[in-house]
View 1 (cartoon, helix red, strand yellow):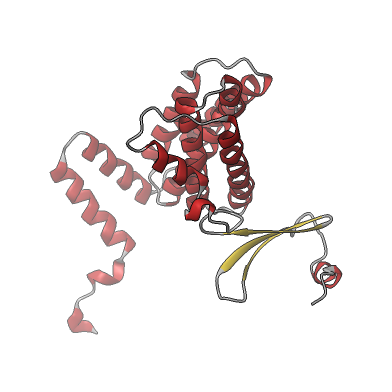
View 2 (spheres, helix red, strand yellow):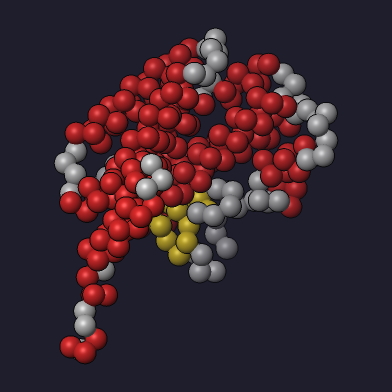
Length: 251
């Protein structure tokens, strides 16, 4: 079989506004493709972006967690660090594309993977320089995670909870220990500003009657006023599923 991909590239010409697609592979699974100026990248939508199973596990991260389990003295050597760092880069490339196409659930999944990479490197890496190499990007990863979670909640008109997530992310980034690298300084400032801007947009957006009910229900649950919360929940269901209120005798 020819290894020349010229024909494939001609079928999908590079256009800046049409770079991303999800196609069905030969075995029926969906894969994510990105058209670059000189080629095509392909990512698995589930598991590791490259489809590999290191150590016969879903990820290097899973392998390291298994090593740590029951072995509190375990440390991550520089060689092991390079493995988990390279895996984190793969997840980073994928969640950038997922965020662009509005797949916020998978963006949350992949950013959570890389936040766990930050945690495990911070706690177990032998080399301080290795820790810096990963942790300097934690503000950015946390920002992408928070924005994606907020977008999912806003889709369900849960505005109050979305705001709380954004505020929490801002506080977490502001409280991060200082890392003496230009990347950390830049990412912390940029992420805080971006989150504050998003928070302002959410606060200023007009609230629909349905969104208002959901906000009131969230507040009632938070205040442990469960009777009021149940009443609001029923009203929300009536609005979202009007067909369920029809008299069956009329059908």
